Amino acid sequence: MTELLFVFYFLVLLATLLLKGPVVKGPWLFLMRAFFPNWKFFHAVGYVPHLYARSAAQQGPGELLWAEWVLIYPRCHRRLHHLFHNADTNLGLGQQNLVDHFWADLYDLPEGADPRELVTYAMIARLAEQVLRARDANFTHSQFELRMVLDRPTGKSDTQVMMTSPVVPC
Image 1 (cartoon, rainbow, N blue to C red):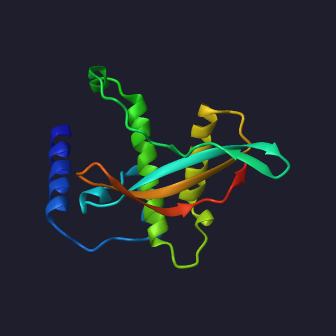
Image 2 (image 1 turned 120 degrees about the horizontal axis):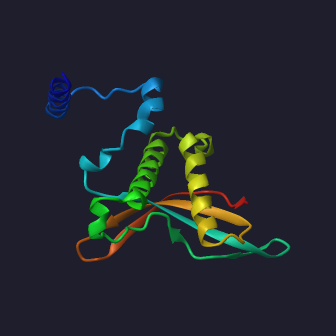
C-alpha cells in the first residue's frame, strides 16, 4: 500500500509539472506557503534578492557610528561530510526562502502600502537582528536592506536597492 501511495504522489507531481493551469491565489494558500519552498527562481534568470544589514553604536547624543553592510546569507563552503549532515546550510536555505518570500510580498504590495505591516517584514527584521547580535552584541540601532543583484558572466554585478528599512533602536 505504501508503494502505491509513493507512485501516486510522483504521478501527481509529474502531472503538475507538465500541465499548466491558472495561478491559484487566496488567503488560505498564503497561510500555507511557509510549508513550501519558493520555486520562482526556475522561471527566469535575472535579479536575485539579497538581504544586507548593518548595526550602529551610540557615540553621543544623536550620533551613531555605523558598521559596514553585511550580507545575511553568505554561501557556505561545501564539504564531503555535508552529504550526511548539513544543518547550517539547511538553515541558510530556509532563511533565503524567507528572503525570497519577502521579495515576492514587496513586489505584490499595492502602491503606497506600508511594508512594515507584512508578516515577512517582521520576520526579516528579526532575522537581521539575530545575525547582527551574533556578530556584535553591543549595538544600539540596526537597519536592513533588500537588494536585487544581477551577477554577470564578466564577474561584475548590477545591484539595485529594492527597500531600505528605517533605523530601529534595539
